[in-house]
Image 1 (cartoon, helix red, strand yellow):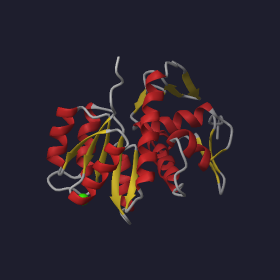
Image 2 (tube, rainbow, N blue to C red; image 1 turned 90 degrees about the vertical axis):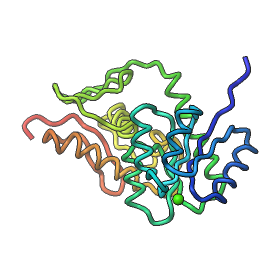
Image 3 (cartoon, rainbow, N blue to C red; image 1 turned 30 degrees about the vertical axis):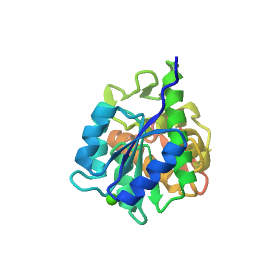
Image 4 (tube, helix red, strand yellow; image 1 turned 45 degrees about the vertical axis):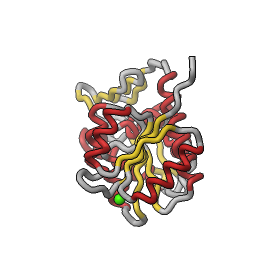
Amino acid sequence: MEKKTTKILIVEDEAKLARFMELELKHEGYDVVIAENGRIAMEKFHEASPDIMLLDLMLPELSGIEVCRRIRKVSDIPIIMITAKGEIMDKIAGLDSGADDYITKPFVIEELLARIRAALRRTAHEKTNTENDILSLKGLTVDIARRTVMFEDNEIELTKREFDLLAYLIRNKNIVITREQILNQVWGYDYFGETNIVDVYIRYLRTKIDDRFGVKFIHTIRGVGYFAKDEEENS
Ligand code: CA
């Protein structure tokens, strides 16, 4: 059977940039579909069933964040947000809305290609991953196959990345893990120095688990990294 070509949906209202990405990606052998605003993005998404999406943040009609949220309700395809320089809060909002990764404009095409390959590799890896481990820390249960997290009888809703980070921490419980290790294992490659993304996600997990249930699973070793630890009795 012929191997299906990977289809990329580019959502970008700057026509020149969209055209540039289209040419480069076609040159790499990808199928490319373009949408120039958020509303068209949703239409093209349903019409074309892309394998991966490059999503500009600032868009007419529907913002990139809103597009991302809507797609996340029905699909877990990789989404790479395209943000302008300095939109730190927007980046965080983008990741929080379910994007897998982001790239900052202006970028070199090699970086974009590397991120696309990494995102596609992770998806392929997840699809072939048939493990059905149940990981646990005291009171906390992570079901890898069903991708659910429970604290005692309470279900905890996590985004995909939060889940992967938590699973990685618990797999390596009681071992200190550096930010770089987390980036490599959870994000899949070096993050070009922006390791603070790990801190952002640790904060999300703490809010959703430690703060919510008054427990302390995630510990910080200042200047080094993090580790997950069974909560001590009577502490
Ligand atoms: Ca834009």
